[in-house]
Structure formats: C-alpha cells, structure tokens
Length: 413
Image (tube, rainbow, N blue to C red; front, side):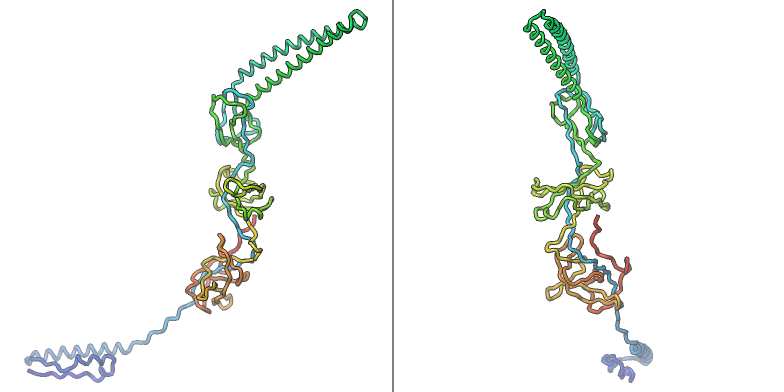
C-alpha cells in the first residue's frame, strides 16, 4: 500500500482552470512495484497533455466586435404633387348604334342567309319573305289599273266629242256636264288604281329585308320558314366601326363628368393595352343599378374589341377640397409610438436615412396619399423600414434611374 501525493504544477495554478485542482488531490492506490511504474508513466503523460491544452487555450486572440456595413434599401422618387385621383369603373363595350331590323309586312320567311357574327355591308340581303301572295296582288292591281285606264280613255273621248258638239250648239249644257263628270270620274278611278298598284308593288319590295348600313349581325331572334308579323324583330345589326364603352357612376361623382372629358379604357382580354376615350353621353337619370350611365366614345378601337366585352374605365377626378398630395407605396409608411406616421428619407450626399413625420390621406389603387411632409424629388425608403435607425448608412439597390423607381401618376391620354 503506497500513497501517491500529486500536487498541481505551478503554471497550472496560474490558469483559469485552477478551480479544478481537486483532480490533483491525494489519491490512495494499492499497487505492486511494476504496476506502480506503469501508473506513474501514464499519469505523467496525462498531466503533460492537460498542461499543453491549458497553454493553447490561454494563447487565443480576443474576438473583434462585428460592425455591420451599409444596409441595402429600395427607394422611390417622390413625384410632383397632384390634386386629382384616378377612379375606375367597370363597364362593357357596346355598338354606338344597335339597329333592330324587321319587315314592314307579314309573311313567311323563305330565306335567311345571314348568321350571328357575320359582317354585312349596306344593301346586303338579311332575310326574304315568300313573295307569291304579293305578286298575285300586283297582277290583280295591274289588271284593275288597265281597266281603269280604258274607262278613263273612253270617258275622255266622250267628253271631248260632247264639248265639240256643245260649242256648235248641237247638245245641251246638261249633256256636256254629264260627259265632263264621266271624264273626271274615270280619271279619279285611274289615279286610285295607280296608287293601289304602287302600294302593292311597294309591299312586294318589303318582302326583301336589306342592311341599311354596314355592321355585324349581333342577334337573330327568328328561324327560317317562320311566319312573322310586320314590325317583329328579325335581326339586330351592330355598327362595330364606332364602339362605345358604357359605365355607371354613383351620384356623388356624376357631377364631375362632362361631355368631352378624357378617359382611359382597359379591356380584360388586353390588360396591358390602354385605349383613349371621350365622354359622349352623360345621363341625367339613374339606371337600373341606381348609377348614372355614362357613355365613352373609343378612339380607333382595334378589330379584336367587339360589343359585349368587359373592361374598366379610368377617370381623373378632382380631389375633394382640391388639396394637393403625393403618392407613395403604403409599405413605406410606418407608425410611431406617439400614434403618428413617418417615412425614412435618404440623404443623397451622406447616404444616410432620417425619419420624417407625414400626414396621410386615403389609400388609392396607385398608392397612399401623403398630404404633408414630402417634397418633389425626395427619395423615400419602401422596403425594410422597420429595421432602420436614425442616421444609419444605407446602400441603394440597383434599379432604374438614380438606383430608384419613380412613383408617379399615370399618363393622361
């Protein structure tokens, strides 16, 4: 039984790990001679390795505090103040003239060559009635007219003969008056027969329904070989060369719309194309939807736009109170603990941000109204506003002109 007394090395006591000196306290061990030598050899190796680790740990360098670089931000350039707002209303394209075509006489449809969507020109045949009944009436009236003409010629000859005899004193005045009455009666009957013949011939011509103007057939409410009445709709012809766009405006805005006002129309099938339009009609009474109908005349619409297509009309209307404002994205404005709103303004020289309080208005489709606090040409941060600090250096992200985008109002047509 031997007792080994192991004490800490002097340099170990100088290290921060001296609190672990309990590892080196007296340890009672029962060993033989050979085992004692092996134990001492391994224990010394352990102490050497431990001391080396302590020395290496004490020679480490102190960490350098992290200093963040300029924070990247995205900005917009404030556009000039404006006093109008863009109001948008859904509507539908309509033909400037929808003409309902019908026959002036009744009859049975014998021919209906057109189809819905077909484009026709002036004078083109739309439909035709069975003309046989009208042709028989024409022949009957022609015979009656010939009979009336013959009677008129005989009465005229009798009148001329009696008048000659009366001039030489061979007939009395009553005989002359009788012959004159016969002549005038025959002339009246002939004129009546001619008028009736013209009327029947006109009715015969009414059995052909032709296009009064060029356009497209938008509806055919009848079928061929159907018996139709005079005035019954046969076809609806739309003039698609001069399209209109109809919208409905509420009562509190209709007073701002006047004849000739400019507008912009965007159709759902062509969302990236705007078409100029002018106000052509402003209704003075509300329609079925309690809105006031307003018609816009489209300027040079393409052939792809047809009546019935849905779109949106954009009007530039005056702001209530005629108060000027600028527009910024809503995400560029943040709240302060005091309850006010603010934005970050970028100093173009020092590339630092500074907080500025603003007075906000309404949220519009183009952005948030700023009534006070911003000037034209200033750069406003629009991304990452909640991670900035007063006076912090920033780096503008790559973008358009001046590494920022201009948030401006849409161009007028």
